[in-house]
Image 1 (cartoon, rainbow, N blue to C red):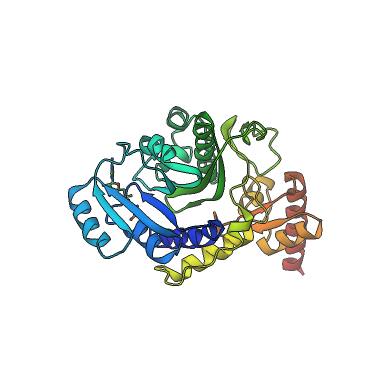
Image 2 (image 1 turned 120 degrees about the vertical axis):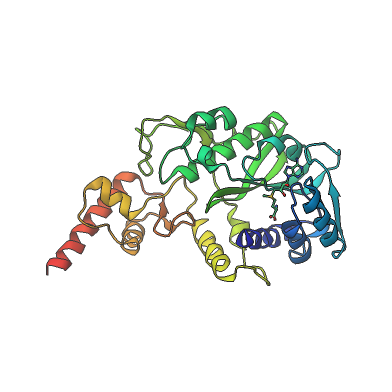
Length: 334
Ligand SMILES: C[S@@+](CC[C@H](N)C(=O)[O-])C[C@H]1O[C@@H](n2cnc3c(N)ncnc32)[C@H](O)[C@@H]1O
């Protein structure tokens, strides 16, 4: 998770300049403290970081590590036991589902503060066990290649509902799927009477204008609003001392591109070729060029190397794919 912690430092460096003072943070499940201590030491955003961990050996190492960083405090305790304290930033990074810790995490975020939450229960969130996802998170994910993004959106829909129940509004600043997990950074504001309803809804694959979702649906309810705050994601820079420089730089570049076309789900040339029966997939660059020439927006996604998001409806994307495949084939024959 070294690259993921790089990204956490990058995000806090991009988000926190808006704050008028240094922040108070809490890493609920700190293990030996690498994430929280890196945030404290490298982001420049924090005055203090509380780090809690229940495992005795990890907690011992955590205490040792925290002693080296002014502003850090370590405690061996069960993070589910409420302390009553509130923070500008709470980081919830469990093995598996964050749900057992979510009530405490939400209660500990000051209005306008940020909750960062990881989920690694991808068998559930990526649609392999849809019944379990409905029971746990209250939404049905898509199965297959778009499963991880749908799981991220089901998780965000769940967070939005829990925030709403507590009089809050959840607004994602950065949310992504990577390797075996999804992670979201969400600002929790006080909800006001004039706030619009949350963009959380079920998706019917028969009428959905984006990429083919497969199966019968309906899927969700899930978050269909933005995954990115473009002002913050557009400011992302790799941190000065990244632990995983190459992947972090590539992820940051990709997110900065992607935040300009923040629509639900992405297309892939291979999937288009399969569903349209094309002899070979259209090239990614060709698809992006054809769509932008047609007046649409298109951007690559962090989620898959060959994936792209676009505001073009599926019919337009398919038309562009057919035309490109035809001209590619004609070139091969010539
Ligand atoms: C995925 S690890 C955390 C990794 C860490 N955030 C990082 O980036 O290095 C989850 C940690 O949560 C701890 N944990 C599990 N249940 C806990 C609880 N109820 N209270 C405090 N810590 C707990 C585990 O012992 C484990 O060290």
